[in-house]
Image (tube, rainbow, N blue to C red; front, side, top):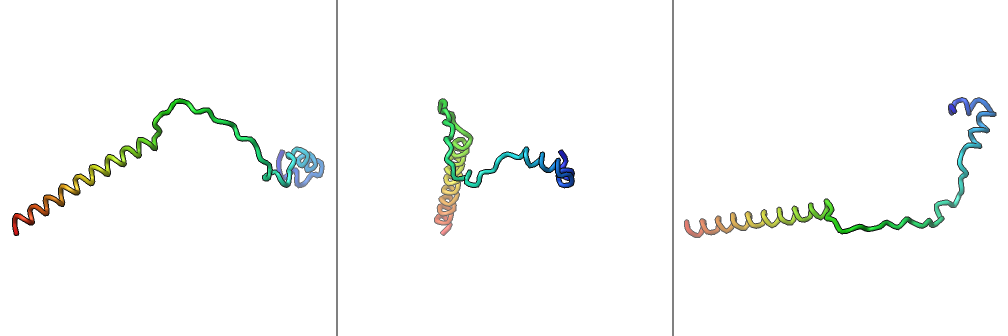
Length: 80
């Protein structure tokens, strides 16, 4: 049904209003039971894979940084 026709024709307006679902003022206060989700076997999710890669990348970066600083210090001590 066209909204424009419902505004113009009183019979169509009455039909359109009658087809609307009932509106309850305090519906948001009702507590509904949430469905219980079954948990299957443990599978590593994408977040755990990302966490493992981030930790490995950080450790590798720290090792490279430590080695480069140690090399710079060693070279500075050899020159001085």
